[in-house]
Image 1 (cartoon, helix red, strand yellow):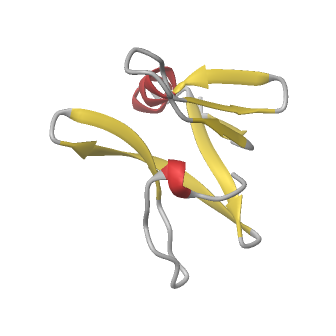
Image 2 (cartoon, rainbow, N blue to C red):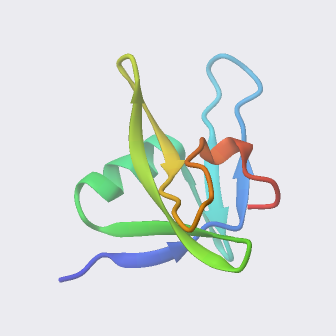
Length: 87
C-alpha cells in the first residue's frame, strides 16, 4: 500500500530542551520524531507548499540526530524544515 500524503501547514519549534518539535496540518499534529518514524516505515509522506510547489520532506542527519528537511528542486535551495516561512 502506498504511503498516505500529509500536507504540513504548521511547524512548532521546541522552545525548551526536553520539548519536541511538532509538525501538523488540518486536524492533526505529530512530533518530528513520530513523523520521521512514519516516513521510515512507509506509512506517511509529508509535504509543504512552497512558492506554489508541493515540496516533499525527507529525513536528514546532523551527527546522530535525524531531522526533517525539504527536498527541493526547480532552483530552490534544500534546507531545514524549520526555516521555511509560513509552512
